Amino acid sequence: MSRPETKWTCDICKNKIYWDELFTFTSKKAVVHYTCFRDKASKTAKIEPAQLEIVLDMLEDELRDITIYKQKINVIKEEEIKKVLEQAEKDAEKNSALLTRVVEKFSGVTE
Image 1 (spheres, rainbow, N blue to C red):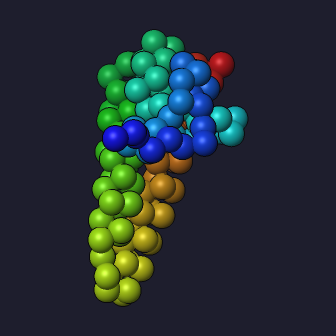
Image 2 (image 1 turned 180 degrees about the vertical axis):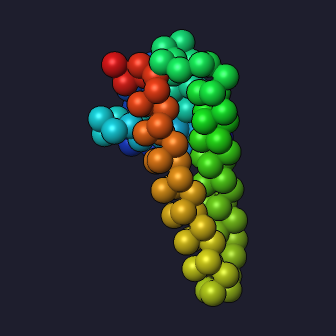
């Protein structure tokens, strides 16, 4: 069984991104694996590393939530529940974008 691919390639490692992997969009309109993003951000922290790690952990939680919402939405048949879950997914996407920008600001991840 093959893994479903996205249309994107990681801007950091240049490998294909698959739907079952955590990934985020940078302010430079690039897509990156979360693990690549985290590794590079951790190595280029402009603030106390422990502070940046907290934000990275929170970002990981939001990205995991997005994948969970996507999985659960596909099995929900009740339209009202589906709409609530879709809104929750959008909120998690918005939160992950905010956290990604914070990491970019306080590290050299996109430099």
